Length: 361
Ligand SMILES: NC(=O)c1ccc[n+]([C@@H]2O[C@H](COP(=O)([O-])OP(=O)(O)OC[C@H]3O[C@@H](n4cnc5c(N)ncnc54)[C@H](O)[C@@H]3O)[C@@H](O)[C@H]2O)c1
Image (cartoon, rainbow, N blue to C red):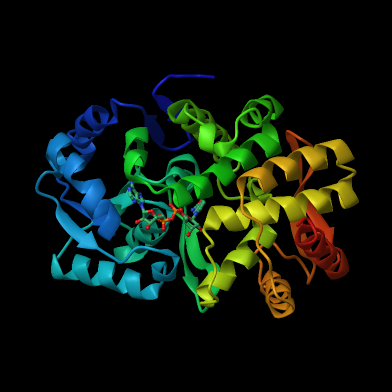
């Protein structure tokens, strides 16, 4: 594994490690920020656990204005954007203003979107504080919100100026969200790094201790993919493995059906179903399918869906952004470490994959 503290994501740097506060301070002192005012976007949890560290350790941010929105996926919405836009208007910000998104994937998605659309775009930086944020959401410039129960329906590509990953922020993150982010680490191994997967599968989630190394390696995988295909024309779609079904499952939460479901838990369900589709459509070897299913089932609680929830999952998939000419498209595994994009699957087979998951327990 590599240990340098800078990752190349294409148009902007991703800094990682214990020194990122110093690096951030130096960067924000640079000429391109010398007319800038800074505002920090937080939710109640990152305000409580993370904000003070930033205010104390990064001098240019010490007197930044603070914007607060409520935490959670159900606040990744237009109302949160309105709060941010109104604050920017009240503060009479100009286009030199920089928004610092301090939080998990919801904060970087909403904050990036609000920044990119305000006055046709003000600059923003990401300071991800959740595992999902650090290895995934904060890198890649995909920003957006959910709309009318549909995930990520409104959004655009808009790169941050820089991303600063401080793994120690995770010390206050609850286990549920750590487990959620871990699903994306698993995905990174499965889609493009068999050796990384071999390493992951040695250790159950609750015994992982080397978080900074896992984060660094996983963030590098994400950055390398988005650098190669920033606008998701082709290759970047491999990151969608587990997400076509995963997003549809996650949409159940937005519908307020009572479920203990994070984005990552939904992706874990999606990865099992889509590994089954990979076996059926691309000939993923049965022993590799079992290896994936066994590891995920050992680490993620099984979710039981009612028949009407299964119908609802199928219905949500009809809105997936990757669909082409009415066909539901997937990124699937040909083998562990090698994913292929644009694989269509019939609704009957997709339902079969959900039933395969249901029957696992
Ligand atoms: N844009 C992308 O490329 C991309 C990629 C992956 C996921 N996402 C999005 O990210 C979201 C999921 O990310 P998430 O799991 O980070 O969600 P989140 O932002 O809701 O954070 C999870 C919870 O952890 C709290 N939290 C965050 N950091 C904390 C810390 N250091 N200490 C204590 N509590 C902390 C938050 O307040 C929240 O309650 C989804 O909306 C998903 O669609 C986007």
